[in-house]
Length: 193
Image 1 (cartoon, rainbow, N blue to C red):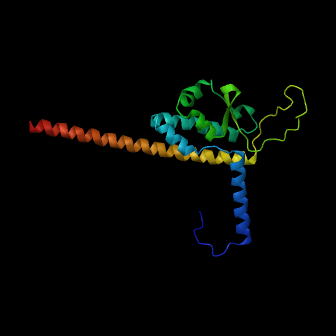
Image 2: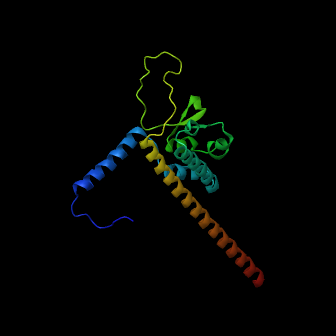
Image 3: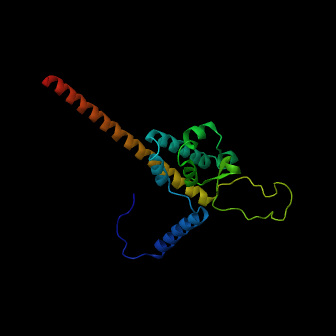
């Protein structure tokens, strides 16, 4: 549980901890520059689609992030093919699909054929002078900054899904109350006649 006691003076340990946290955030922002916030992307998607469609897209996006975090040595989880039927049906067909994937750190590549996870630290191009085919190829690896970014995005998606579920429950309750009210009005009108 967080300590809510005001700090009278920042100790050297507190300052070091704050600097370390700030540096981590700055490295992430620099490395993953331009990634929009998940919540804002889902809000925008909600303007064009049902809560169910947006929640389904968020669930699949959460699955992609979770797979990378669970299987960081599997290069398959670093790519999502846009032709994948599940992606196409649950995310790709929706307005804002590319922005959602970008918010998770996935960039569209290969002439739009797939999304690839952008890692925070790109390895130095040691094979720049090498003319062999695929000399620059490396299997993707999950560095610490990208892992931290994905953990935050995972948390954001979980919070957004909880909010979407709550909104659906409130909407259902309002619909039920409206149905009951209109039923009472019809019954009252019939009794008056």
